[in-house]
Image (cartoon, rainbow, N blue to C red; front, side, top):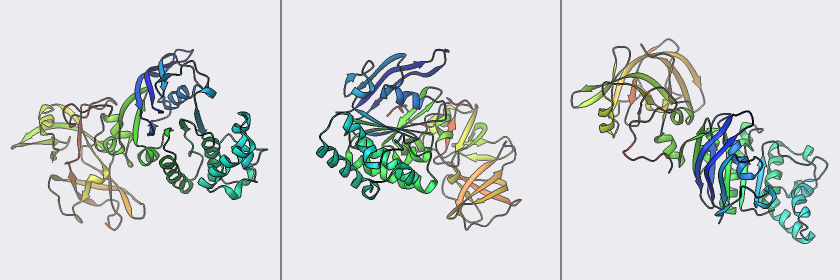
Amino acid sequence: MAEIDLINLEKVYDNGFKAVKGINLGIRDKEFMVLVGPSGCGKTTSLRMIAGLEDISDGEVRIGGSRVNEVEPKDRDIAMVFQNYALYPHMTVYENMAYGLKLRKFPKAEIKAKVEAAAKMLNLMEQLPKRPKQLSGGQRQRVALGRAIVRHPKVFLFDEPLSNLDAKLRAEMRYELKTLQQNLKTTMVYVTHDQIEAMTLGDRITVMNHGVIQQVAVPTVIYDQPFNRFVASFIGTPMMNFMNGRIEAAGSGWSFALPGAQRVHLAMANQTAVAAAAARDVVLGIRPEQLLPAAFVPAPAGTSTVAMKVKLLELMGDHQYVYLECPGVPGVITMKCNSHFRMAVGDQVQIHLDTTLAHVFDGNADDARNLTLPEGFAKQQ
């Protein structure tokens, strides 16, 4: 078993900066766990403490149920893959992949079998005689993966391994990494600041900010039920739209009063939570795909129509981003819609706001709670 438990884990540097603030996290055996967050949030520091490359200030790291705080990195039965590949330039691909096994004095025949098995898995057989400078970025990253695979560790740790690759290679390597994890059935912990990588790779995602865990859940829950405003803003491209206003009674239901004269009907399932936030200054959060141009799309149930002005268009192929100005609302509102819907900068348009999946947050702070979550909703799942 290769479950990992972080128990009240802290990292405080000599200058007093606290990078990780007493986090608790359980990573399941054979799980692909992604740690995601902005630069400086503590995700890489947490990974390095699991690896033993960073001293632990307080708390515990347990791998397979055993405390490893005092265990040397080489004795933790882990393999780490870095973003800079860390390949030996004077060695061939075969020699790079075999190097760790040679240090451990494995028999030559066993080394050859393990290296070739990993090379076949990663489509590297033809590259084995080459040196790293003769390889593409994607091939170098495969070699770094192969070097880790041949060891058959309990745990794989990845520190932003795709950040040096172009968009096409990143997409290809995401597929290969996920396939690799399904084939190896090994626990993997993956650090990234890229939310697309987090959403596509993770069995579960841990969102971090300022050294604190904000939410842990499967990707769909993170996206559809963000625990607080930070998670809602960080996960999703383009970012969720936020509008300040107040909740007011509207017949038998509730509406959201924008700073201008317009009102938005609130159709979220948790009307009890909406009612509890009535007559307070709150923040309405609605994702760009939940805005619909009224000229092209009939109004679904649970929508309100709001007048806006087109400020900018970005055509993305099969879809487009339309940046809108809403009277009384600072900044821009983003809509994601079909690229065949024709609009022009300066157009006055009517926009349906589908609030069935919208959220109400208790203020503008990062830790402002999502008031529309079900009662008893857990921050870590």
